[in-house]
Length: 226
Image 1 (cartoon, one colour):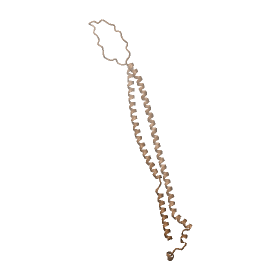
Image 2 (cartoon, rainbow, N blue to C red):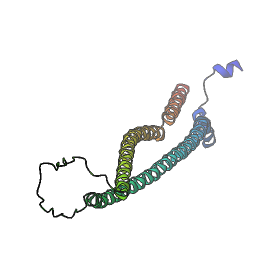
Image 3 (tube, rainbow, N blue to C red):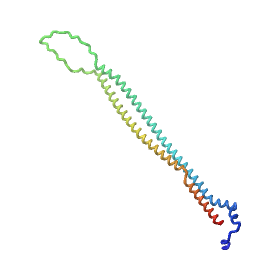
Image 4 (spheres, rainbow, N blue to C red):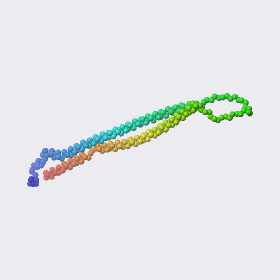
């Protein structure tokens, strides 16, 4: 056994080592593990990409649903503001119509009285002119109260409309900030998705390992042939 181990190789040793059957066996031993590992890692990568895509689509759908809900609220708020504006205009028109009527009724035309001159004697005293204003009739007082009530309501509605306008402006600003934050999050998610879907370094390391194994086999074969 030791003599055969340390003896010179037979003349046809290289031909026996490089038969087609042995070449197939060497290639299987060299490339089968790396090929199987590469296929497995490729399938894992595709599965992870599909999961990431599903998560991203789910996130986008949630964002779209939230945006649709915001738009509905905005439409309702705009309709309320339009109704308030129309109501204010109607109140202004009614107040403008009633105010001239009330002022005209407050100043009734007094018929001129013809005063016949009478001889004044020293004994007849002259009545002093009274400076007191005449009281308004009851229906004119009711008109005045109604105009004051409409004016108060108009001021309340105007204050309410200004408050709603301020709230709407504040919500618009906050919504713009939220949209900017959402856009930044989407950009970050897209960047992460691109990094994950980019070329992986695992296959490159597998190829380097296979090339190293092949180089070792070639060197060992050359050393054995020498």
